[in-house]
Length: 344
Image (cartoon, rainbow, N blue to C red; front, side):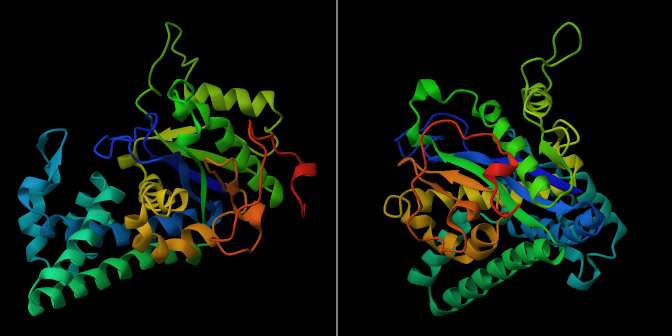
């Protein structure tokens, strides 16, 4: 059995060409990872260890003014002084730190911020020799940590997985509620993955703010959970996808937090594939994660470009990522069945 952990990447509002707009990022989709159920506990435990280091380093290196949550001081900051006194080798053994890290979430944006790379590159270019040397060490540590996280996936038999689109292929009026619109794609990916490996799959997803809306009967007739249930039962996916979507708040699940880290990296790399000139500032981060996030992603992953072409391992096989994608038909993606999946 496979466990699939999914979160959103990009911005769910229609594309806005204004560079200062929140929805200027041209991509939206669902991403995360798939892991064999037998390896789930080990992965979550080892990810938690990695997150413990990440939270400690993130909090002691940030300025007080930067740490905000919904306009209020970040509650994580109250343990900053204690964390600063700890030696590196004592972090994982400290029970207080482990309880603290179990309680709070660390966002991918806080760990892998592209703005951090830009800042260090600026220091390398304009700083003194001492400042440049320190910036170089910081960048090396930044990428070493990112590689350690991505390597953790392969060490536990996990693969990244994604479905995404270039929002510019849609008119604004047609790009409404994409968090609901693309749920069929998520369920179809899970079905295709399970069918390819002759097993079953369950999908766990970060809770969306609309998931909790209920009618007078206590049901959510128009939410993602109801939509996934319709897909499973109405499209014959039940033999492989055993349950509708299982939602978690991200601070309740270490694996959902890991999916959030992956999704942030996708949101900061797919724009470069959409337009290598306009989003060339994303190039450095993309080149660092290309193999783990793209070339080694699950074979059922897919990204749809504005041109009507798609990229994914199942489409391009083992071609390098910068190879021209094969032409695909515009319009809805067909539901998976055995005849559509070569190699079954």
